[in-house]
Amino acid sequence: MNKIKINSPLTNDIIQKINLESKKGNIIVVFENTKDLRKDDLIKFDPNITISIMGGLDIKKKKFNNEHYQRRTYYSPKELISIINFYEKIERQINPLWSELEKCMFVYKVICEYSNYDESIYNGRDAARNLLGVIIGKSVCSGYALIFKEAMDRLNIKCYYQNIEGHHSWNIVELDGNLYAVELTWDTYDKQNNNCGFRYFCRENREKFYSNKHHNIKGECELTFGKSDNNTL
Image (tube, rainbow, N blue to C red; front, side, top):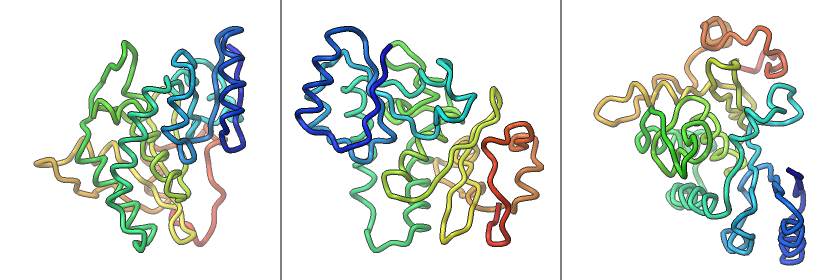
């Protein structure tokens, strides 16, 4: 498939050109995230067009530049409208005067208590390892890490997707210039009476966190961060 990356705001002219291009063959329209995507624009796309939301699966990172990972970024315009609806519902409840930490904790809590750790299928394909999990309310670690990063991107809070290939995925969030680990998967899996316990939210220091076998990214150096005295991780 031919990929067209969009780095500028969508206009009716751009959408029209994309729709015309799609008549020549299958195309994938690539966006960094959904932050600047409007539902009013999405409904103008030909429904057969595939839209890629990269999130943390940056193709500049070698292991993500393959179809195994790239398929996780593909959505129809209709699916994306449902996904954006989910995020907008959360965002309407956020007080703009809250700190980044308060916004981050609120999003973490809502997703944790809304969703359950499980495999899921939507429109005949895997929904547990991408943003489709917000529609189903079920995800596994790679899905949770992408869902949380997308929420942070939309709020302009720096967040990073980390992954040990074939094993586990999680997030690093940057708050007040410091890096902290965010394990939404584990809090969702361990919640009691459907309450988020925040047991795995910004808790451990760098040495303890990365010594855990689930987070030991030795050999995954493209996803590491430079050490800093100011960073928790």
